[in-house]
Image (tube, rainbow, N blue to C red; front, side):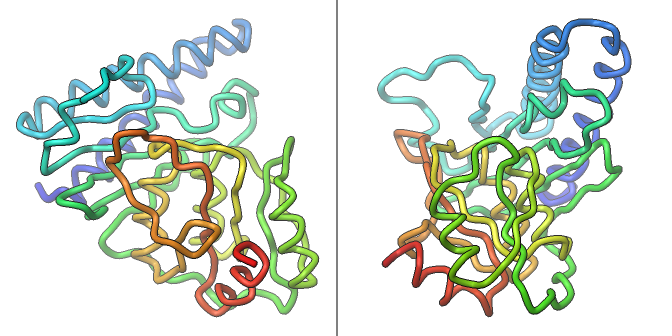
Length: 246
């Protein structure tokens, strides 16, 4: 099984597990659903990757606190996973804007990735992702439904665009890939697991990906904090960067 196929399979299976957790705990407090979803998806993904790729290393949002010199920094292959992206949305029964991320970093590059939207029955995975159709004349800028960053609002104004509110980072990037939005700009603090798989999928679809200053997104760094990013249609990149990097 190729790395692309494995990423897609594991993300999809973790998503199915999360739907089971959601159903089992439908009458439980939201905090219980959050905790159970995070833990059970992490345990599944870690066990599956250990079995399927025993020589590889895993960086997971739900993994243990790393020491000052984690082994992954000397590894040539690191799986970067977010077992449940959009925990808040997952805990709110009926919401579909949450995701599972599985990506593979190898020798300095993201080489495979999958984003599953379990409640939508959708998995987007490398190497082949269909490019989104042409968007409307007024670009749609996807933002958090609770705390849209000021830079995203500035991009919306500069492009005479409209806002689309959505939950998790994975769901936002997926919306650009699917042609449901056109620009995603984030500048409020994220980690590598928030964007690795979405960025791998976006690149496979031919989208522009970068930091908000235009510099490349790099992964498997000592500090996994990767606080900002842009994912957008390539024809909009110059206009977006004129705002974010100015």
